[in-house]
Amino acid sequence: KAGVTQTPRYLIKTRGQQVTLSCSPISGHRSVSWYQQTPGQGLQFLFEYFSETQRNKGNFPGRFSGRQFSNSRSEMNVSTLELGDSALYLCASSLGGTGETQYFGPGTRLLVL
Amino acid sequence: TQLLEQSPQFLSIQEGENLTVYCNSSSVFSSLQWYRQEPGEGPVLLVTVVTGGEVKKLKRLTFQFGDARKDSSLHITAAQPGDTGLYLCADPTGGGNKLTFGTGTQLKVEL
Image 1 (tube, each protein chain N blue to C red):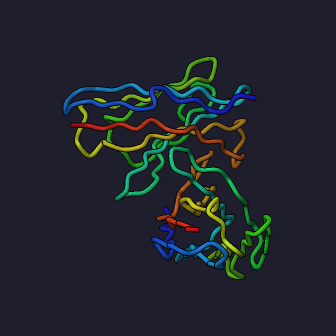
Image 2: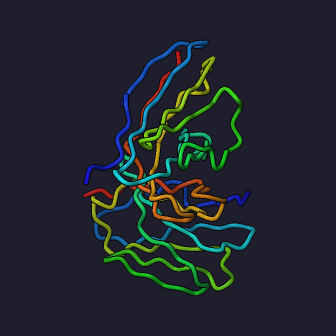
């Protein structure tokens, strides 16, 4: 069974631009969560989608948004990029029930110049 | 939201040594998970502990949940270079599938 895939793996943007990251969950998984990982703040929860609905949201500004499609694939968007948005963005998928094992993708490394 | 403090922050040891890393909180955990993240990869779940005082073993790794469920430890016996990575504890009870991660311990095992 294929694991969680994220595209692109690396991305360079400039301040003020917007970016869209994609996550394809493990087949059959209906929950996708997104996390931001930085050296200073560690791994922080952004949001979770389940059956195309946002089920939970972390403490990030509205510039960070996401969505989930009917095939469970998910995208996250960051608008008006800031230097501090440079990070590794990870997504994780699970079957969907609460507290189930989550499987992480390798992440998208975003650098904002 | 629980604040999960891990110590030490960094650890560099020689192959064959033993080590222990800690995860502490001021609040009680309902359950706690440990993950390992290798360079270029996402975290991988190692174990979930649920009961106070619980001890779980995974080959050379021993996980312990404190009696009061406010702390946990991970002990590695005879560390190997393959154990190198970022070790993270996480609270999986934030609602839905939200994970609240600890600050992490970066482990490097050298030959």
